[in-house]
Image (cartoon, rainbow, N blue to C red):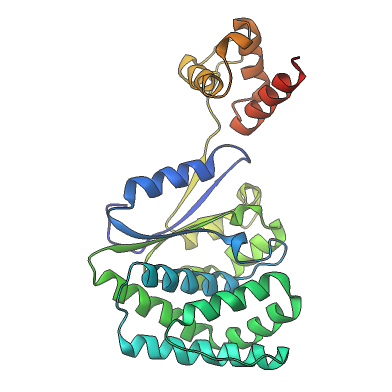
Length: 283
């Protein structure tokens, strides 16, 4: 993250490997050096239906929201552009819905309202995409001008979009393969989570070419490569620390705890599930 280049990273890992925890730790370490926009994409979008215009729209909306929260002056010219672009989207959607619209300088509040409708209403989702898609270049331009205004404060913009790895693999391929160009156009640093299943896709190498780098979050290492009989003490000690923070270490015999670690395969989510089930079964 030391470079000022607008790098675009893909971040993935097996379910329960601790991706979100790692991203949260990254945010806490960089928060005083970057203008960080970190959000769960499913707070805004429908998990079963996500496309590239949705992602770009959510990106702009969250940036505007945080800029408002941090009282960053984006300038009257940019705000007017955002208002003109956003109001045309809003007016079209509210007209379809038979709802009166009204737009002021706090445009992000109205855009958030539209995103809320997109998440729950198929008609709104379809109509919004129909309005945005012919003008996606303008949306990207507004995103980049917003980034430029924010970075005048001295902070680089870093956008982290979590939980995209949970979307349907076919939709993920459409997003990261067919629309990589649009996803990499914003002129700031972005971390996109993506499904680990795409790594096995025949199109993965082409996807990788379009992004700066790909990072795969590992499970906790509990064995050496030589085989199961060669344990990795550092990783196993880490798993034991997880136990000590949730239950009394005296709850398990040492051999039993070692067995549970082996059964988990080093997957933290699975490890915690096993411990929880054992704890619930103990009178």
